[in-house]
Length: 132
Image (spheres, rainbow, N blue to C red):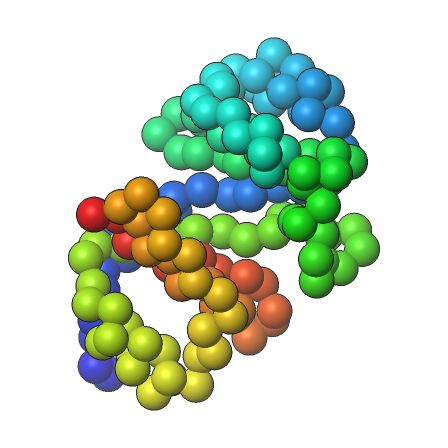
């Protein structure tokens, strides 16, 4: 088997749908000991540190968080998981995914990051995240 054109470094983050950010923060920070790392109210998102990992909360009861429900199935609260990767060439990655019949569903480029979103055979959304 030929190796992919990237190296998985580990699980980068989980994004969870919540209904009520204050209540969610009380649970994750107060009960579980996470800490708030970053707030993005324009997306109704809060990033929490959970040890060396990140848990991202999106308040889907907030109009700014409605984007997270697009295409979501009822009862599913995990939007996606992200695999942090080593460096990769964008064109090589696109070719690799196409050769493996993996459809590129979405892509985002923000502040030194490039993300490709794909789905696994069971329909779970996976983000391949390259940081520079």
